[in-house]
Length: 253
Ligand SMILES: NC(=O)c1ccc[n+]([C@@H]2O[C@H](COP(=O)([O-])OP(=O)(O)OC[C@H]3O[C@@H](n4cnc5c(N)ncnc54)[C@H](OP(=O)(O)O)[C@@H]3O)[C@@H](O)[C@H]2O)c1
Image (cartoon, rainbow, N blue to C red; front, top):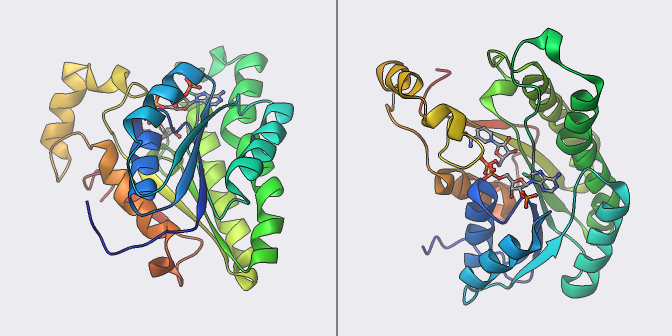
């Protein structure tokens, strides 16, 4: 889809870029000319996605990485820089959801994993990419949060707290780095049809209730998040930082 937005010459890194929302974001960025690394645990899936997205204006490069592990994150940045150069656009999209259920059943193991993948990964990736963005005159970081980080998700203590944390980190970083032209924004999706949210969209009662109460009475599509990410990544959003763009069909309105 032509938008007039150009990211030619930019390097983007999208965690969890092999499927779902991350794939839709990678597609939009590559269509606009960015060279994009997609990173997650399953290399085979990443390779299939890179193949599917080949032929766009920018290259799509798959790199395997468990974002909950510091050594793998450091290796991801080394490989990204050697293949495509320093990162201009970082999309912290990869996430996990453990411990859905009664909060008293949450174990230390679930807590640690949720913090490692949903919180620490973003902090580490920012630490490893932002200094070079500052040196180069700017950059854009997009954190994929959730409306669960704004309104508590029933039976979702860990998911809600990690997404709320990501939103506050976004605002905090925005204040710190605005003067360096490094912008931080979050996107908070409502229910989007992906593997991650299958538990909800396969539940007929949940979908019936959504259709009865949500102003736009349907489940969202990954590309509806991709469009917003493209805007936030681009110079068209040069005065936008520290914001949370809610894309939820009006669910939280
Ligand atoms: N779908 C929704 O309704 C919805 C709503 C609000 C927010 N979100 C957020 O949107 C983002 C994308 O979710 P999605 O719906 O597109 O889900 P998805 O299709 O299941 O994608 C999740 C991605 O994260 C990667 N990932 C998971 N654990 C990882 C790890 N330890 N290391 C590296 N990569 C990992 C997965 O790849 P591998 O399995 O290959 O590692 C996958 O690419 C998440 O942050 C999610 O919280 C989704």
